[in-house]
Amino acid sequence: MTGAEIKEAVVEILSDIAPDEDCTNLKEDVAFRDQLELDSMDFLDIVMELRKRYRVQIPEEDYPQLASMASTVAYLEPLMKDMEK
Image (tube, rainbow, N blue to C red):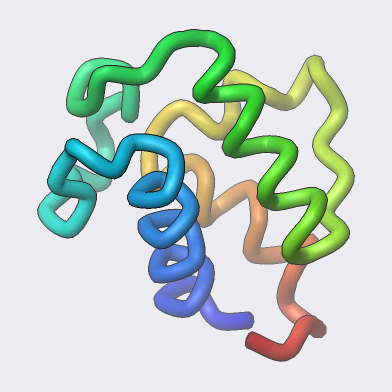
């Protein structure tokens, strides 16, 4: 998957988890929690959805790298580069 495809997938997951939020105009370098009404359980749901949909294992110590769209795409890109969308 490309960075753009990963971003699209993350927006889709965020929209599923926070259906009342507008996830289409997220700022790249601002933490999701500062832009959306997400709590720690919502964040875990994001990690679980990535695992379920794309079989990506994210160790707990790497969770801070999923704080913003830019850092999430940068973290996931090498892990998902060989995956089909």
